[in-house]
Structure formats: C-alpha cells, structure tokens
Image 1 (cartoon, rainbow, N blue to C red):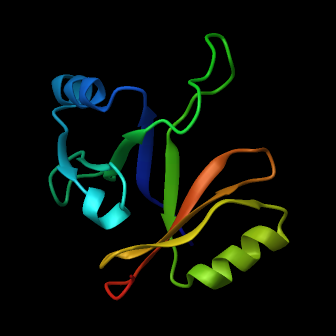
Image 2: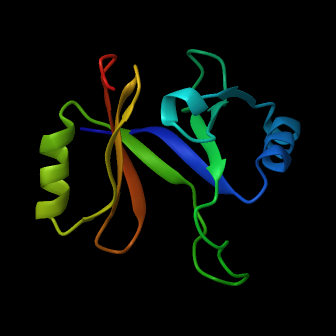
Length: 131
C-alpha cells in the first residue's frame, strides 16, 4: 500500500507564502532549486518523528482558481518502489501524464499525473543516483 509522502503548494508570491506559513504553523523552508532546476522551496512542517509529511512551495504554473470555484487543493505525492511500473498502472487505469518523469538530481525520480476526475497527483521514487 502507498500513502502520501509529500505535498506541494503553488502560490503567486513565494516570499509572501513563506511568511504566512512560518507565522501560522512555524514551518521552515529549504532552497531545493539546485535539485529541481527551478525555484522550489522544501517545506519542513515538523520535527523528524512527528506525525505528518513535509512538502514543497513553488510558483503557480497557471492562473489561480477563481473565487467560488470547486476544491482548491494542495498536490500530494506518493512514494513508489518502481516509478515505471507505477506509471504503467496509472495509464492503464485511465490516468494521464501532466509532467513526465524527471530526475531530482541526487534524490529521486518525480512526475505528475491526472486521475480520472482531473485531480493532479505526483509519484516519487527515491534514487540517490537520479540525474
């Protein structure tokens, strides 16, 4: 069974969002831009061993959802043992590729998909040799 291991928040103003989440939840941030190849801040949401998962903060890739629209949610990522096999299952079940497999240098393989209802989710296979 696979559960969420990472979440992402897309924002219009990264510095404003960092200030907000620091003030409200005490989250801290680490610059992961070198690993991702674009501006990306890792969210440290709690101490090691505390319940919950860490996440990421990044620039929104499209317009913000309009006021009054349906669910406006974070993107969750599931850790998998075999990226390619999991992608095959996603596609066979009717899912679609949003962002193909990419290397998070020295960390993992990552990609994003749509489920059959148009919800975005990620899969993540740890691999220190990824490049």
